[in-house]
Length: 409
Length: 145
Image 1 (spheres, each protein chain N blue to C red):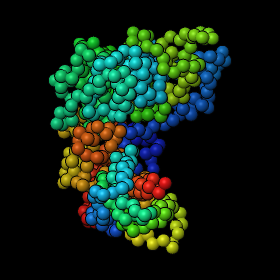
Image 2 (cartoon, rainbow over the protein chains, first blue to last red; image 1 turned 90 degrees about the vertical axis):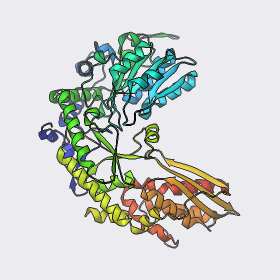
Image 3 (tube, chains in turn green, purple; image 1 turned 135 degrees about the horizontal axis):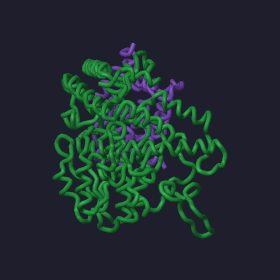
Image 4 (cartoon, rainbow over the protein chains, first blue to last red; image 1 turned 90 degrees about the horizontal axis):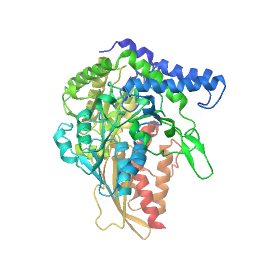
């Protein structure tokens, strides 16, 4: 377990909700922000704010330096070869849409296949649905194993010579499953397909090495990893990005503009039309510094331990079902569950009355809810600031919810 | 403290409607069918109405959702059956005001619905309570056009 002192870096956690100290268990939706990140945003606006890549003046230089330094921090964080491969975008959703609209439109034709899985988040389903509809391509799903994991055998059955794109989440936002991305990438490549990775739930929780994975694209969001909202990253291999057309045109991304034709800047800027998300990128850089100081390996271990403890404690509650792999070593720091026939919204309201924040609903994964044969679930997700005491509070809250609804029934 | 707050939301009348929903099911000979869902949380309602001569002769609902959404649907059907279309729409309006915490027209007999007043104190749950009403408004509204 990580040192409990980490909590003190997060000012928001030091408050009462409905008369109880806040227990925040919704970090898979968005994480809280350490003071260091809040300060980085505030300092940027207080001292350095200016537009980037254009001014001759000092503030312009400082802003540009801050923005481009953040890009290098991201590069190192995911071990990309070059900053040319790191594009700042609004978040995972925008990044995945960009791949579908730029790479997808240029490379997927009628009868070609796009492969995803039943556990994907809506943001890794709909861009491909739209692309498939537009191009007359076939969208194929890899089915899941009983415990909510992926088997490489099933992946092999679905990917064929017609497959142009395979797009799979690294870590499931519902089941917590950690998928074998390196192995799936090998299978995709052996059929000539590119591998796209939705890293939204992976980047906050484990060490990502894009060179080791050998994936072609990786998308993730800053706000789930202690950074601000509105900033995310698309990593792409240089040779692919070089051959791709931008999907947004305007200022910042151009080289020469004529009356009837224009040329683009080099990577990565050709994909960053308009004034970029300067403060967001700087905030993300500060978040990376914060996480690296703790160590991604330590964070991953902390979450496995906490998930293991939560699963053990929660399974003591009669009538509580847990979804996803039961082996804590196979899952990230979250537990998705249902409590008897008490609706997850009602569970979440009772918990909220006790200061405990959990998510209830379909978690932007309607196809997965169908696969699980439930209409919605509750989810407790953990991050670096959560402790075993938080889990104990959750378990107490769940017992209260159970008693409360048993009484009135 | 917390349990007392919960009691404001989960009044026994609500839990009774949730556990023993009135008018649950589908009207085979319905002339108005509405499907609505709450995309952020997954609640769904399938509402069938029989509207003749400007009167809601029958109303049934089917669906899935939390206690608040299903109890509200049950109460809604109970209230609108036998009402004129404009009365049903007026009730929907009154209910909406109630959810916003506004003073409501006390000349209207809201019956069991009074129990849902506590929902207005739980902003995240208001949309649960209003789902069935929105479906009804859409249904009778389309019929009266």
